[in-house]
Length: 332
Image (cartoon, rainbow, N blue to C red; front, side, top):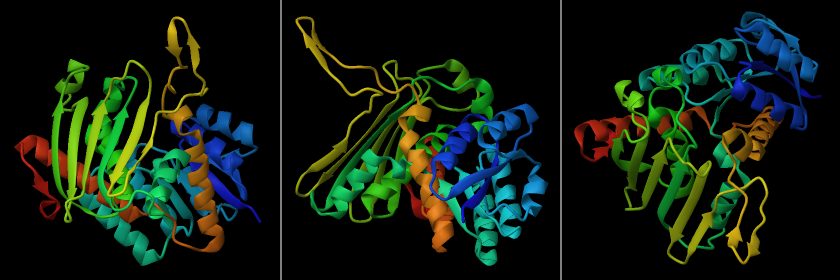
């Protein structure tokens, strides 16, 4: 029997997840909720689902799971509400912008024995996943250094910056999770620098648009992260892992992977323009993994704890920038 899923939030990421639910074996979209009924209706009509309120979905007997794509400040409350309602929960990152609120939410989830998965979709990207598999197979020996490049094609509008929690909690948090995914050890020290190089308005709002971070583990493994809100050439997403026996890397992806060589030189198509197209396969794979965890009764991954640890790294990065020093994770 198919897992019946309700979608909370019919915005940009909600549309991506609706498509992923529709493509996931063993899943069907049955209900959609959004503060704007027209947005909910547009998705519901396309997938044969109904438009419902959040409370109606929580009480519905035909809903097994929910996908939370609402604004960040609603995540923790909704996770708790649906955990109490006995629904499996998939939530976009982060659980909350407050580490203490995240801890309280996860405690509730644990006490209820609820199922919770966090939306760190990049773990499911086939290219990044293949890097992890190469590490696990011992092909490059012991991991020593990781490099992550993540640059957006353009900065979000000021209205988004105001509620995003800042570049480290909003953007770099994906890279913090990827660093943990690839290093295989917990980070003990964070050193970060950040600037406003793209849009002065971002600085006026108390945020940054350009950042560099170095993470170190207890054994000395290192990860360097490069972030920018401006990449004129497209959505820049690359990783490289250097090990004791070699190196494995994942290059930028293009919508069409060809190369044309003429007397004028070598030409390749542009990069993907943003995450909606670059990570299409990853979004589909993570929802499939969520559905499979529900069917098998296993704990899904990434977990709420993974989300908490990534947010803690973001807090350490903010502290590092403010105090211009390396910050130990035991301080957070």
